[in-house]
Length: 72
Image 1 (tube, one colour):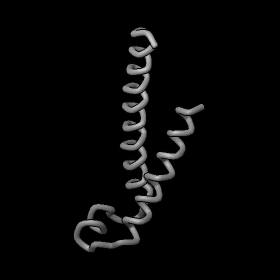
Image 2 (cartoon, rainbow, N blue to C red):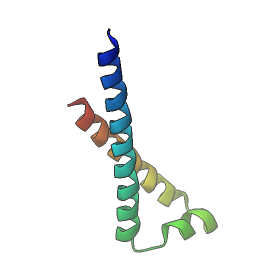
Image 3 (cartoon, rainbow, N blue to C red):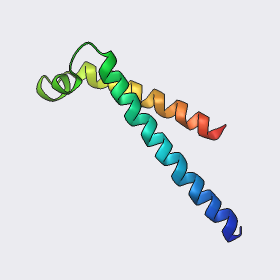
């Protein structure tokens, strides 16, 4: 493995991680806009476990989609 291939792999990894993080942040804001209640209030003040499960399922689903898009 030469340095050019290693450098290209490193740049690709950094690029895909930045794109993935941007997709997660954008997706979370979309979910906050779609849901008819305040997500922060439900999670922090009311400690609503169901909302936490919905958000975690969304994050796992989005991670699967981004991973498959990167994988090809």
